[in-house]
Length: 303
Image (cartoon, rainbow, N blue to C red; front, side):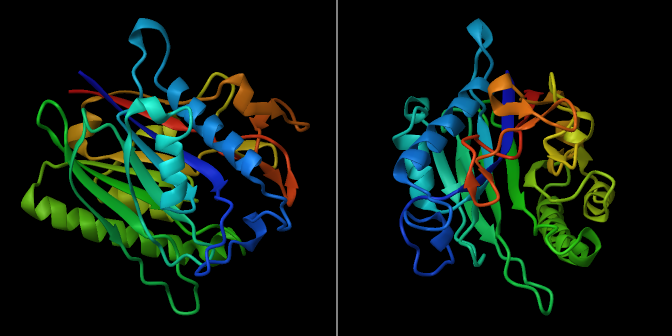
């Protein structure tokens, strides 16, 4: 039986309500970005459409069993996505963090309760290095498949490269070490555990934080993933690369049948440097009408 997970950076999925505990003013009606409910509603349905399409088409169509989402604001956005948008008939449930991130950004996991019976969920807090602001919590979820296989899932959104890759690398290493601490706890109880780590690591496969996870026994299924047009999930200064990753333990690496980038034409636009690039929602403060500046990853396993 196939089992699949999708990982997607939604590029600032904010609702239109003021969160008094977060700095979300730029994404309020009347804010500098001109965020409105109609734009929010359009983005929700576009994300729902992406998730639908990642399930394939025709008789083989099957929605992802798990969907790891990053850059989502709160529980309200996930409720609207799963209960009110075009995704409402899919039956997804969700788990979400409540992070101390200054902008109120969180990570979430959608799951199909018929194929992933959630056992437990919790947020793993990351202690900021001295002088750094708080970052997103890591979401941990444990569940069972229909074949009674237990899977441990981590959803990660590591600190950005704002300020420079080298200057911020230490913080992403801190996040990687926090994940490895949790892996060690799981493996102490179950050495052959099925583990998935998915999300936006803000690092490439060759960078230190990913190498640290590789050294901890995790395989980056997405290292060589491509789409029909895209050679990565993100494009910077005309060059494709993947800041988004799906890493798995040896037991799942053996069951992996595919890992690809979902890049239908409607998620892309022409790049003046050549080829295509993701069509993003905003260019700076200006509304651009796309879905995200990232493309989704989809990995499939045989159970």
